[in-house]
Length: 332
Image (cartoon, rainbow, N blue to C red; front, side):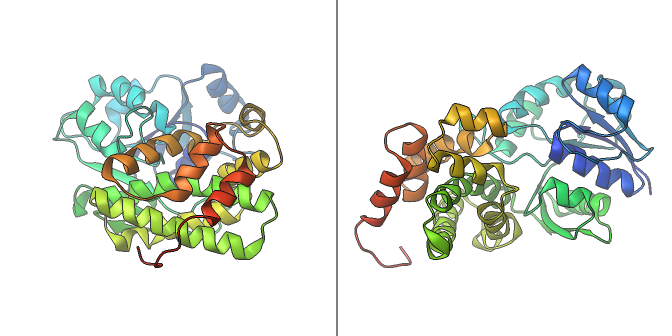
């Protein structure tokens, strides 16, 4: 059955997901905040700015005004950066029908508050709207190319999660169902910080042993914080946690990883961001550290990434500080 769907956010990830939905036969409106970007997509029928070779199906329509599409929409998907999540929610709220649900594929925490995005959505929309989040190991270019991809969709109810699973599922895109909103969101935020750390260690040419150790200890930090917030260990050991962590720490399609490599090579943060674009891990690092401090959770890798970002130490010094920590049992 075909559905009318609005995708808010026309970056690489939003465009890739919009194309998946359109390929599945749904009528998709893809909104960008930039009218010139929309005009370019309408003229070329692709998003050459963020996702080269992304030829749009006929049933995918770029739009500058999301209101007409929103009024008719049966499903709303957010793919905006985390720092724009609240602002975009506030824009759509007057036009949402009562009890209309939303799903987001945004990874990260709200900047300056450290809030998980479902808390932001509840604050803005109220309690009556069902909520869902899509996350997992998924690079936009590979999704566009039709390479097999598995993700997790968690929702405030099993029924609502199932509705999004049905919208997305096809022969090469396989969503798994969850009701652990906290675990799925937390994994998507922390993995970006760990990817910066992995990029630093690889940029310093510290080898495969170091990378494996960092991923493993990074997972331990992720699980500690996630469980303290009410997430489930099983979620963080799954696609939205370990899966996404491995992906972003080991492949150079990850901007967070490349950003860490750039810092290790001596580039400044501004130089690296100018070259690479938005780095979600930079936003997430401070908020994850604040959460950890508030809950008294030990996250030494996150701490050292923050110290590098705040220019309190060099990447080399951060690695040495991690290695010089007090000896301890592994499962602590």
